[in-house]
Length: 201
Length: 201
DNA sequence: GTTAAAGTGGAAGCGGTGTTCCGGTTTCGG
DNA sequence: CCGAAACCGGAACACCGCTTCCACTTTAAC
Image 1 (cartoon, rainbow over the protein chains, first blue to last red):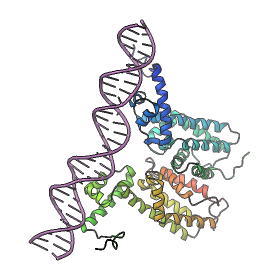
Image 2: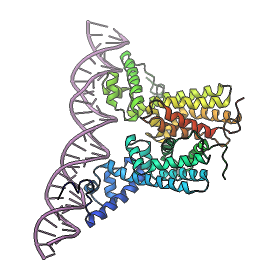
Image 3: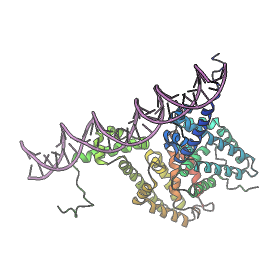
Image 4: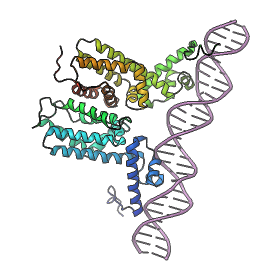
């Protein structure tokens, strides 16, 4: 009744069919956008999900909202990877494995590549990174790696999104089915970040 | 008269006004595409050039043809830079300056970034690189740098287009007016390519 | 100066994609 | 079991940008 009490957090339970369809749409979207990136059409998603376009729009106000929902999931995975990196014994190994994981994720999801390399304004990108705890987690990993002397002192947290941008552009390349190209690219970049005087403990 | 003699190389001199307009279109296109990349509209180019769209289409069959004409110019600059790299005394300095120059070019032309990172199929990209002598020049620079021990033995010519792809994605970023970000990125990549045991002669 | 060929401008055509709208259907509390 | 509310499907709509088309203008050869 009181419009104030239920203003921002107005969580209303979805009807059974609605909840099912929402999942179907999300699953279909993950697949379509993962393969075709931003150029995926809303109609494709609807068809794949076995629902009408109207249903897609009922759950997501527009294409951007759907895309951001998908991308947020991926960003959460990036964050999770960063947390794991902090727990690895050897700081360099943790750092390296984290970026590697990020590469794998990009390689198997064209949408996240498109998103990171462009597709939407930088503000949204940063907002989502912040929301999903990625910005903070990145700072932590960098600090940790620096403390251990694993990466150069000149490396800054902001260098990571930049690298992900470059890596994303490479990873979404259509003619790299084996992933050989992006792996080489990442390998060179890691060499550029590593502190030359570091040796695993 | 004989259709055979003038078949493939049928160079007909353009009328004076046509030649003038062609130049205007090219100049306008360089500016528009340079700033806005592939999303530039044909109408924009026409307006900027002070001609009708029809005139643009008279000189270039479609948008792709216009884009490729512009990009070919840039690729020629890449090639030219590579040739200069071979003449520099210190192999590492030559190599480094070349990639730096490539970065500058990408930073001031969003279209070439779009082209290198996507926008068109890889076949066209490779075809133009071949046409403009870039592929060959790249092989030469890599070989030269390796001979001098400036870059790691593991570096291959194909790694350069890959790096340019990543660099292009970074360089076209709208929020990097000073170029600080792409320069840092390139610097790290160079560190990854450089042979650790090399010292300038 | 005359005329045929070359060139021009820009309105209209067209294909493609995100989004809306609403008659019909499903859910679920009472 | 009933009815209101929530939900669904997909045709229709709206918009946008590349490309075409042709009546009109300019060039340049004779």
